[in-house]
Image 1 (cartoon, helix red, strand yellow):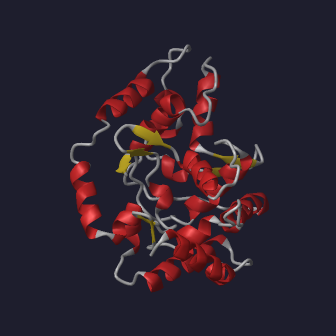
Image 2 (cartoon, one colour):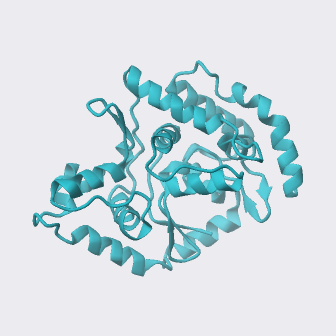
Length: 279
């Protein structure tokens, strides 16, 4: 299917989005509805297969991926990430000293809604809180050479942990719903939403790439593309918005934090696997 046909097909299917995720559904209903949607669409796939993204839909590509992951082409970057993690801050403490459980098996709990702060808190925000509490300047949220690499290592400490996002209380639900709205709202000159590609269009090809399903997407970021090019989840949000000719936010914005909150909740129960390879 060529790009123009996909654009036309997705535009015609846009009216079906409300049926996929009813406006009045609660978070768990949203998640179950999405699971059913993809079960109907891809009956041969197990829910746990979705952690592989579009690779789950192509056995040859999945086999190649598993071979690549035996000797990842970005080990030098992972070494840099581990060095950042272990380098003491001005206080003499390391990140393991100020993060819950030494940073191990915590990433699956983020993003989370912080009632005291009245907003969604991401893992990157926790890292910056740790830095400023120990005499360091906060890192720029979207800096892949510092924050990106550090969180790449931090997330590997939670490999295998199941995503466990909580939406509890009116304020948390409001943030979740705001993220949901961003996911389903059409943007840009192409008039596409995230759901156009990753719910209705999942499994279709755009040029040489298969569009990945929504479920499982949030489990494996950051990713390394084409070797050592690290891409974080919110950087990808901005890139996707740019692809539909919409001016996206900078990583760390309230809109993207809420989007990540909603997006990650839908993958609840799936195991995390960080610092993976993608084309």
